[in-house]
Each structure stands twice: as C-alpha cells, then as structure tokens.
Image 1: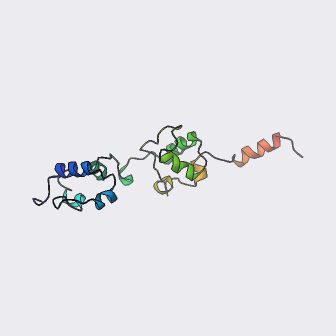
Image 2: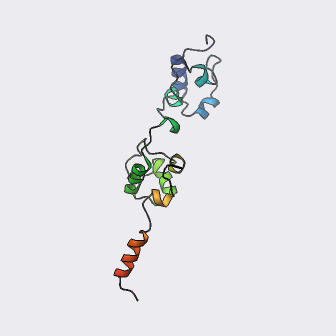
Length: 145
C-alpha cells in the first residue's frame, strides 16, 4: 500500500482532475502513485464507491434503496409521460417543467423492477388507454349504433 497515495489524497487528486465517471478516470494520465483499481487498493482504507471517489455523489443502482414498483409507478403516472423516450429525456434532465426524479426511482425501471412487478412501459407510465371495462362503459354511454 505504501507505493500509493493514501485514499484521501488520491481522491482529492482525482476530483481535481475532473473525472466524472469511471471511464473518465481510466482515461486520465494518472501518476504512478494513484492505482488503476482504487476500489481494490482502497477497499479497507475508506473506499465507499465511485461516486464518493470522483465527487459526483452517484450511488450504484444495485446499492440504492429503491421504492417498491407500485410507488414508483404512481410517481411516474403523475408525470403524464407517454413513452420510454420521454422517460429518458425526463431522467436526463431535459424536462425542467417536471419535478426532478427522486434517487429512489430508477433510470431504467424495466431492469430494476424485472420480476418485481414490471409489466410494460405502458403500465409504468401514464396509461394511454382506458381499461377495457371503462372503455366499454364509455363507448356505451355515447349511444352509437
């Protein structure tokens, strides 16, 4: 371990270098006293995760405490988004008219909720169609022949 900077100093150097992702980190022209695998070298020296090391605060999806599917779907319904590309734009911050995505709601709900309630984008986002019984009742109310 003595060949490398202490964790806090390595983290300070990486943050000052401006790397925002692991890929950015790998492209840095690092001094030899900054390891290429800091998650291994510093695992017992204070390593929390890449978000902490790089200063972005990002927490890996598998470490996040996500809302249950039903709660996330209820949140998504209120946004009135209709398609997965609209969801992606929203998650990428391209919808300033909407509240920010809570960290407990995944960027890729189809992955995070697979086997945990996920059915489809139509079910997760604002439904485009009325449920059959409601659609039938509505059609009957129009008294069409």
